[in-house]
Image (tube, rainbow, N blue to C red):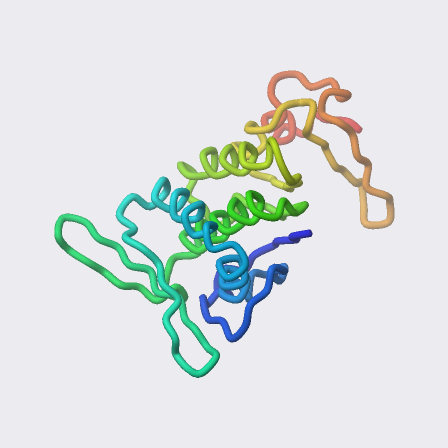
Length: 201
């Protein structure tokens, strides 16, 4: 099982070991990526394919040794005969989330975990949210399972009525009510109804 609520500032790309179990905040991203590549070397191609879709100028990414057992990820970009090498920790929060998504996609292909990702649309530009969510959904269509939470209207629109649940609670002292979207009468689309406060559970 993969449970993610990433905090990109904690994702450094450094590793001193390998694992197939990421920490919820993503702080052991380098060790998770190293573990995945060590166990399933072909996962590199899967991750690379996705990263080239979202960052066309990426050349490659490497785990360079920085000590006896320690490695650090370097990302190289190339465009118009110019090159740039960036330490993974210096990527933007959104770019780190692209890398996280690439590893989630590769993990799903090679060991099909159940994945819960709390607000995967965080840290992304508005123009990237739709593609990001659609890619996650498609990846888990035939294997594994993904459950995401979101308050982002673009992300919400990428799911059908049959697989969207609405959660609501009146206060911290009352239980959370859970309803399948297809069972709730909504005038218009879900995000607009949520914004107007028109939904009664």
